[in-house]
Image 1 (cartoon, rainbow, N blue to C red):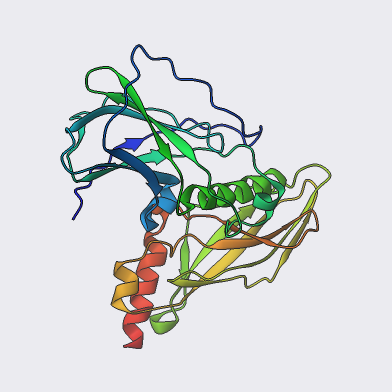
Image 2: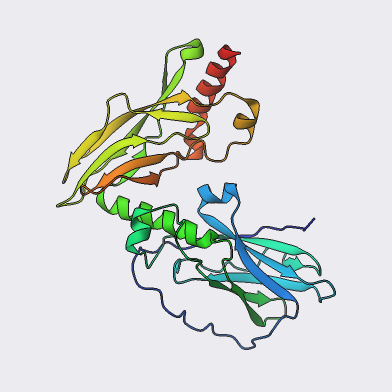
Length: 294
């Protein structure tokens, strides 16, 4: 089994604009080629909520160990991804093993019209990138990241869809959650703040897609907003699953997709995560209601 070490690289935020071009060269006193080094991008389920991707660095059997003090992801799709300082304990890639280095992507750039409408990225081509490595001896090396499994392409499509929708109608969850009912009918209720809608625009919330844990219900029905208008929308969470596996292994239960229609266009799914610190009421209500069903 590959040994995996994770170092989180915090990105600065940048706007969703610009065109994809050739990245500027990286200044370095010494560029080296690392024999036996290969790299690509991967994304685990837990990475999606955190807006990050993993750069997998692998060394062939028999290669010399590689000490990496710093890594920068260079991608025109996510120009805000920035290098960290040296890792506290250093990161070493041993021969015949791999290391996953986590990169927070930041805001997207160079969004295409298709990406603004389709967050799935199913039809998007790979988005190749480059990893720039600062090695233990102070030299630098680069590794091509072909995005063979299109993890970066899908992350870019979802980020672009979210940014496009937010430009028309901002959305956020209120931190305060309450409950209604009791026993098997206990439900968590939250408030979704929508707006104000951008000048000259319009927006509609047609519904909210279910997640592995909840059905997200709008008791007041769809919401229509004109330019400058805002709304506080009540959302009720009905249990979707009560099995122990769903509760213990959840990665997307609090990341529902809002069905938003900006400016009269067909609705697009926009994922809006409930912050982790605000989930206790809904989690407790789900556990209690499920316990009454057994």
